[in-house]
Length: 379
Image 1 (cartoon, rainbow, N blue to C red):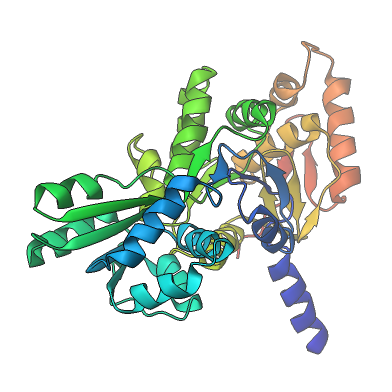
Image 2 (cartoon, rainbow, N blue to C red):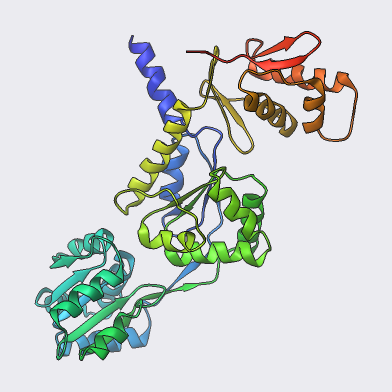
């Protein structure tokens, strides 16, 4: 019994075996890649944007000094990485202690749990958190309470302040903006370009997005290369899984009528668990055979938790057989999915023989004078 439990855990850990996952973010890519690799996924990196740090920006220091001299009533923290960068920049100039003292006496508003986590890490407490992780919720609440005459500081994220500066100023607030980092060009434009072609060609099983600007940039790159429609089509029919860390990140996809996989909480760990759970479910509904569960990914097939050593032609034939779900597939149909235009029945026999060699003899049956079928379980 213990052996069966161990095997079950091993299979669970490798539930993404043979799955190629594209990561579109540069930040924390190592952490994300390691978590998915442990589940058996093959990782491909193609960051759509880079983060340009502003820790040495003179204007940030000037704005920080002004904020220390004139304590704000409200401080809006839009991103965890931006808030940490701000404190680090202040510390480099010897301003961290006075800045933290001022912030401790201000009302701190956080745009989601990651921003709140960074605030807590600095020894502070967020007075209110926008659980939707949207700037719109922050604007609705603060404008509803009234900001006229208040000093409001807004820590920008890479894509800007989402209009918060403008709406608060129009409502009568004295607004100070603090730009800590900005989004820059992709670190490897050729890798980005190659990734959108690979996604359109069916070489990618899942694409992971961790920021709205990154998602928009990657989708725009696909559109600029003329493969945007193909990428979106694969997302829509779920032959390629779109995965977003949260509702804000999902917006560029939703604007293209794509509904991505999302965790209930906007954290990378939750995103990994949600993606793994998707493939666990996919495994339970995959084709069941007498020799184990059969799953066919974009470029590989997994049988009973093991990746089969198949060529692209072998994958094409196996996909054809799986589509019939136990029905008979003719030799002519097998020949049609093989490269070239051969009408020689021997070519189909060779392809089936190689498939049997890789998958085992119990998976594919020959139906005399009719063709081949996949042996599937009926229970």
